[in-house]
Amino acid sequence: MLYLTIPEKSEYCLSPKLFGSSGIRGLVNLDLTTDLAVKIGMTIATFSKNRKVLVARDTRVSGLMLENALVSGLLAGGADVKVLGILPTPVLAYLTRCLEADAGVMITASHNPPQYNGIKIFDENGIAYNDEKQDEIEEIIRKEKFRLADWQKIGEAEFCDKSGFYTEMIWEKVKLQKKWSLIVDPGCGATYNLAPKIFKGLGCRVIAANAHPDGFFPARSPEPNAETLKPLAKLVKRLGVDVGVAYDGDGDRVAFIDECGEFVDFDRVLAAYAAYAIKKGKGKTIITNVEASMCVEKMVEKLGGKVVRTRVGDVYVAEEIKRRKAVFGGEPCGAWIHPQYHYCPDGILSSILLLKALENENKKLSEFVAETPRYTTLRENIPCKNELKHRVVEKAAEELKAAFSSVKDFLDVDGLRLTLEEGWILIRASGTEPLVRLTVEGESLKAAKKIMEKGIAVIRTAVERMSK
Image (cartoon, rainbow, N blue to C red; front, side):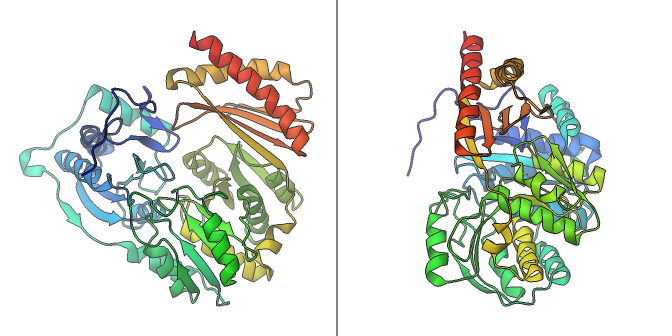
């Protein structure tokens, strides 16, 4: 038996605002408790009189515990619940619309470490709740204005597998001509079963790695990146397959390894696919967030397309895609949205559609991204208390403008993004952790370092000043 010593207060405790950029998220049994999960369930049942709700979870150890609590709250509020078990987040989102549910609730902390979990709510269209809806949910929770059902009208729960609707949709809409060979790495997360199954159904030769459910994520971190995917990269090169694909804990993100065994940069593959979507799609607008590389504009604008930037968070990208009827949208973490299918970032779908793009372009993955400019991106996280981080960003924004003499443009939809002569800098408060995030991109390493040094100095000074 493993016993944990729980500190009196979590360093990463939920801020006064429950919802961040990815729903509610926190440390299990410290920030995110069964008591809170029950309240969230009752609140969802109360909100907009939701009567038909879908619930799913990723593979985390705490998932079943929180699922039981959440479902209890939903039933107490009079909602009927379909409990779908372990599913990727995008599958839950798709099924919410497909099965005409009033809401879908995903229990996941996505790419965060195993001690975290979270709750993300989707509306009837399969789009994550926006700020307005989240604020209303929060208000009900804080004031405990729950509407509990009469004992005769308590909801009913059905435990069922509806994943076939998603699988059949993919197989019906996407046809691959080539017999691709690939390694699929779910990382012991929610795609462990569906991803290999769907690729095999499309005629691919599939080698599955880390394709078993384990909420401790023993094989690798649930966040796929260049560092955590080094073993996969070696395996791709050694076995000589066409591509390696890896997913995060809940399957809304995907990362790629090319045929040479090289990790494919998130920004460059996003930009390359955005350009492909412009060429093949029925629109000219691409949506991405403020953190994405300027290579997205370079690739899209030369084809006559337009890039619109949003706040960080898939809900903002999804809403802007829908509002502007954009052909494609995505974030530089492997979260891509394909509006022709649905409005949730979808790792499995994205990896399949990338293979289709390679077929249509008659290119290998390394060739597909080869034309995309390569810039230097630097990132720095500066610790800052949750209650201070937004004020620090607001205060530092004016000082940053003064620190740089070559500001060509600025965007303040999420923190502050300054476009400079040789690159850009973004400062923003983390939506899930007590951090102020700095992202810098330069046309060269020297330019990026110079921009970052100024940015760090301004932010650290602001944090120290406001912490006194």
